Length: 105
Image 1 (cartoon, one colour):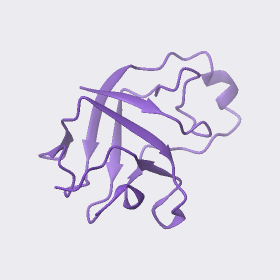
Image 2 (tube, helix red, strand yellow):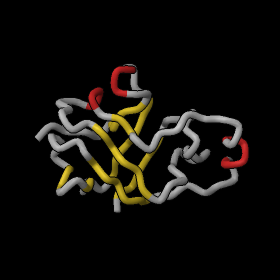
Image 3 (cartoon, rainbow, N blue to C red):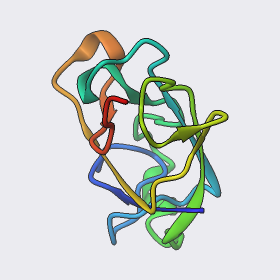
């Protein structure tokens, strides 16, 4: 399991302690050469439910399914990094998020 820090505060699954309330997330970016070409495919924009989720506890560690095959931490579509960070992205072509821990092989 991978430790996850998440700074995407407008995600439905974001907890107040910068963790994720999901048990697993998926990172996309099959042709990525840098962080900006990745995204958290589990991201869901905040809606009315967010106020109810503020009481949900975030997970320090979770399973990360990773389709960023060019990342050195990708092993058989699983992230083997000890810790990753997901943050908001300025590159809207790939979504609103990115895996800030992506490292090209």
